[in-house]
Length: 430
Image (cartoon, rainbow, N blue to C red; front, side, top):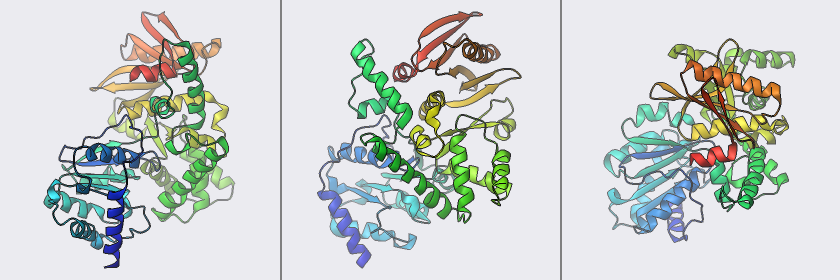
């Protein structure tokens, strides 16, 4: 009974609160699909704010008492799976006149309840089709949803802020025909490529930004990885995570990391490190990019690169990613392509490499190279040759080079090469 009374207080407090003060994100999940809407992504990337925005919009159309919101990271909500029905009991005791089938249920970070999927599936099948859940673990997106919520759900991946969202959150007006506006945008681009896009860090002083991001890293390390996967060798895990982040935009070599740990006197099996790499992707700390291969098996088993979920997180670790702004730029382009739901790979032949190729309808439709500065002749030749090789291989008439601030159009071997600054590439895409 004590837990039910606590639930009543939490629910009632939510209904008495004023409208949530949140800025809208580009991602606007639907509220009327009659499917379970699932938002998935790294901690602190803004999933809860998206739920708040959805609740704000709903509250303009329906009575707020038809909406139930619970955050399962709230320490007052230490419920077991067999106690989740108390949520519905508490809600109905507060509002006995409500028809549950017409109510909307928002469950934030629900993966904290072991066995949550059985409760949600029962709710969907017997109580309400209006269910919205978030989680910080990609298992929620893949295996758990595939097996438990098959046919009942629509899933959306949430990332830290894109550059266009970053500008909107900073209230920076964008007018690409105004010199003053472009100056503000370029200044914001420099900060974005250093500090990243975690919403909480946007208005903090630099010294506090790093502290917050380091705290994110520690929570990911100890709670999302060590605790969730019962990892006792946290020394090896921490070393592995920092090496993965430092390897962002590069090929990841488990063998190399294994040898580094071994030479440091840290004992761990190579297979365990491969497990660590899976876990890192599960919690969205970093994502893998596969080398393009016509063979599906080779795509999965072949060479792969690693990219961090956020540039600022890179710079807040001991390895100074900010020393090479070109890496930040490439990481930012990768995240933007992922954010847009693009099916991407990198291309490499015997002599050349292209950072990103985009697959659309089983056909490579775009080739994108990323470089900070094209004014150095050696760099220009290398980047051009890699892009042209990809364009020729896939019969593309156009290729794109995303730069820091250079803009040009080059015709080479009947292939049009567009040089475009990151800010313009990202904003034009919107």
